[in-house]
Length: 369
Image 1 (cartoon, rainbow, N blue to C red):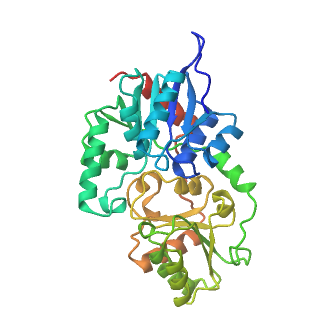
Image 2: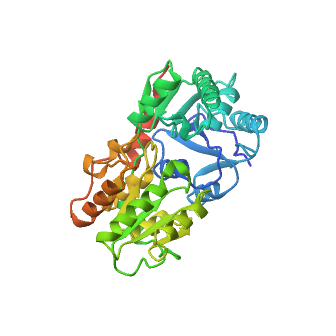
């Protein structure tokens, strides 16, 4: 579907956000948060495939157009869909999020008069995190360097993200850092009203409750968490661990839990509502190889939970040093979790709000290259 392209001379300028995925993940959260607070001086319209994100936007009363767009649709179809909507809506800015949409937008905006803006959410310091081989890393670096030549403005969600972009892609533009915004009141209300999580295997037993919210894949280092949790159980025998999420390593992780004698204290409930999971947690642990600006960590901090994470990417921009630990040191991870359980001091920190995030984004649109 496409919105009516006719606009009055006094209508707000349109920022068309190009989102190539239909599902609810970190970037979808970013989109929904900006849609909730609005872009000052701009009308936000989101282009995305049919799916849960489009449904959530429609429920919120946001302007959304859907069509064949993203990896499932293919590159040519995605370019055609974006160009069709540029022609219909006449946006001043096309703002792409995620690599696929970035490449499509760099091509689709040619000759349209719309400025191409990009936000980088997912670059890693180590190329192996997202690209399995050296040749693929080199190829993607060349593609990103090329499409950035078309961008009129470049945004990163963390200083670490900016560093990785400059180091790998060498953009000619200055990179503006605008972290993901959170509102503590909104986060705590969402967690407080969330329905209980089913399948958590004893979350109501009363012992310390540890939570992982991550894709079950190698870069999230869940095996190291299980090793650390086995050590934690030596001093906290009533502790339970919920490993929420799904992914290719789920079977191997369940087998590891059994081998470690943790079958009765570790639950694998699959995908769960993040707010609901946090409502049943005391400490959130995230031992990823890399993170940019993790909503999981931001929400945990906003909710006043204990947090333990690796000192990678944007994590040190969110958390104090006492919460940061190397994943390979199971004893140190277990000790950090125990310290969070024992302390009333939580890693709270000042952070930009959703409205401030949106205001800064709109400010970038006003800048001329």
